[in-house]
Image (tube, rainbow, N blue to C red):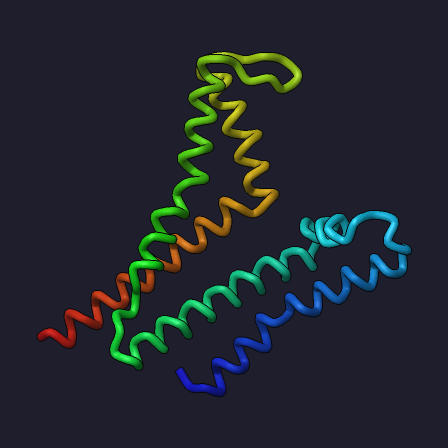
Length: 164
């Protein structure tokens, strides 16, 4: 990719700054009656929130790609041990969700009523899964895992082509 196309992508994904400025403007017009985080959260489910999430994911993808490219240019391995460790650690929220659901299936899940067994597991999975998606833990982990796998596969293909 050319330097010019990278700059265009950085500007396009920089929509996150526009969104944050809009949220701060709304907060200032409202007189800051609530914490700033509440104003940022209000837009999370709106069209501006979708722009925020896509911009943030795009910026993360560009930053990781640029970092891997710099590592390649200096002769280092493109995917370092830090990336591998962060990939493994990105599974922790899924493991914690599964452990909590198993706990709730045995000891019950309280949400208006107490449910046990499969129903407790299912209800805990739905409620806590929704919470982890609202506070974007699971989407970021999934994005990081997909990005890591794509970069890893591409680097393996390049390594095989160079080896032949």
